Image 1 (tube, rainbow, N blue to C red):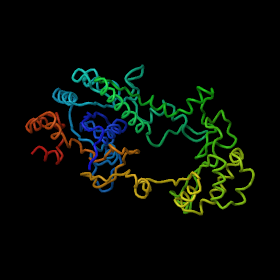
Image 2: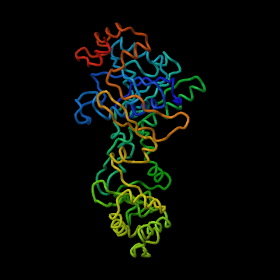
Image 3: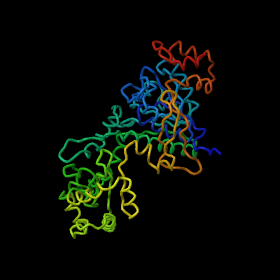
Image 4: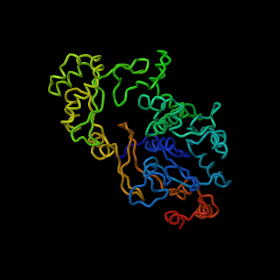
Length: 442
């Protein structure tokens, strides 16, 4: 029996692009919402561009990048030129029959097109309008443009990142985009619940930069409560919680855990590592037992947390001599059985193809994409027993569902659709049509 999904019957008009906005609508779709993604071929989403990684053997083009395919599952896609009167009218007609409109442009773009909150509220007073601009829609700098890495810098995350005495490093992945997408979902669902209770819609105004500040909570508390500024000089390199001898003023975490590091395991290859963390003296004693109680581990200097921190370099070297005798998963299981927090460091291949826990929880779903073929898509990190999320539709090819959506929802005829392609409403007149679009027009 197919279980109902909680957002079935909710329609989302999706003007989002790149990562944060599409990540939010992706999850609304997983809970059953109907997502209609609006694009224009002459202003391609960055994730559709040839700058993105394209799987081997796949012809380059806007439908080829794998990251777009993952970020935009569970959506139908249409192409629409909202800069023309006809295209703008169609966009407004779609908004008038949608529950949620979501966009993540800088604050002036949608207003300039005539598709801002105040414009659409006139068409549907209870509309929920979610904006995800880098700086929000209020304040002196609301019109500034940004991307995830630049918002990270202003939010304080870049300042805290990097090795001691080295320049700020930033983060390898734009975590603000993924986190921003989750905050976008939170705002949309909260507003939807409010409308259910009161009948009133509202504007959800998310600032990506401000949201990033919530991820620097420990440093924020250290400054406001303890009066200590965060400085990276002396911050622990690698995976240690504290570097031996580092003054507390330079390390807001303080001396908390040792051992706490990633250790090489048997094989010594790029992917052969395991993390071990002992949060108490008892856990350390458990680890000593797992290691077979070697003489070095029973030395009194390691019996207390302070001693282990003071001699952390020697401690890590001795532990690693032992970890290199075991394969990383065998080491993990041996430690976990003894009550020691140890986890193998997993590569993407490990996670997708070999992790039995993720497989047991059904985290990955195999989808057939028209161009990319069969590939796995990540699912929700939580499960619902009565109304589960579902990844059921591959990301749309650009303009794949234009005829389907506009005939189904707005009652346009096939001739109306053909005329829209001829006059540049649904496709740039200078661009040849893709075969699947030509097929839809016959």
